[in-house]
Image 1 (cartoon, helix red, strand yellow):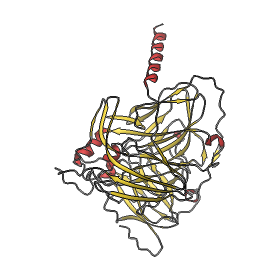
Image 2 (image 1 turned 60 degrees about the horizontal axis):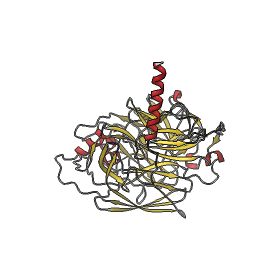
Image 3 (image 1 turned 90 degrees about the vertical axis):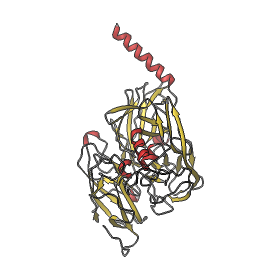
Image 4 (image 1 turned 180 degrees about the vertical axis):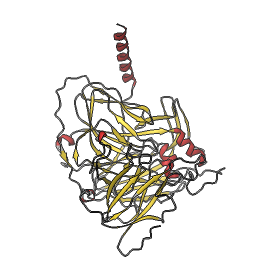
Length: 491
């Protein structure tokens, strides 16, 4: 009898919790028209409060997260980025080259997008000072795959502070009409910008960059937000498939995300690229900082929360709430083979033309935020004109990745393809999958290939996406030659 009473109490408490939860809201969407999205984006100070938490921080368009930008392949994206931050006065710490610094300086990176890295496009060496503006103009190639991406600041020394405090937003490259089977086209979508807010890391960056603006108070100093909310409910029709676009806007820890009982989840895409064949049955998503996953979700009954396991702690992301109505069992999802554009062609049986192995070592940021014990191929960041590797247009690059159990590797411009199954028991990392950000659980070596197409030349950055590591020197710059005769010196 006591056991039955306890179950009834728990059920009542769950019902009360759901009743008190707010419904998931999505950031405001700006969508391209006639092939153009032309906007002004302000980076400013934001006062954020929710459920007893308070944060004075930075954000785009006065919100956390910022606007969602939605476009199609072939569009042009123009962003007038206005930096409305203020100059900090005086600092007890003398910043080193690889350290937290310049909290008022910013820029913009379109994380995951297959676009040029040359100004005025996605050039992360641009520095926009306080009360300055910069006009970005980004041409999205006509062959750009549909997918889920995001944007965030990327100025060396202030990235962790700005992104960790909430300066980011989603980017969606939409599917062409009739590009997918009707079953997938008709799915209702939920955009979820999931951010693991690690306040000690952000406060550390603020302290040692002498930032006077960031401030936080709350019950716990590590928590999950989704679209700026804490564990909102997601109301769904019973047994209906929904598409969840999940952007993991984190500055550090990998997240293992699981559905609760009563719901099922199937993987469609990772890092903005559809699987070669989808959907794929997975028990969990393994998202590194900066990673994305598109999943099909359906629930037959109210479920416990969709949760993330991060650094041995479990956090609720959203709670599915199912409408009380009759339903019939839905149709299973049809298998579909992705028609990949040229830059995502299967490289597993293509001979490499060059090799570039990438090894991460170390990983503890010094107490004063200076120096770097995380390095790439034995060397910390020097400058944007010192190149670890020179490529030619058309190269097929074979790369052996090491150290990515501890360091999520992010590569700009070009995604990379897994050449064999990794950690088979997860069913998450399969040969042929594409990523632009990768962290694995146990594998000491991961082999990938990269297609350097004929479309882009110029600088290409590789770095650890634990952003305190990036700020303190865990980056490298490569270069893609425009012609075979162009001189590029590897150092």
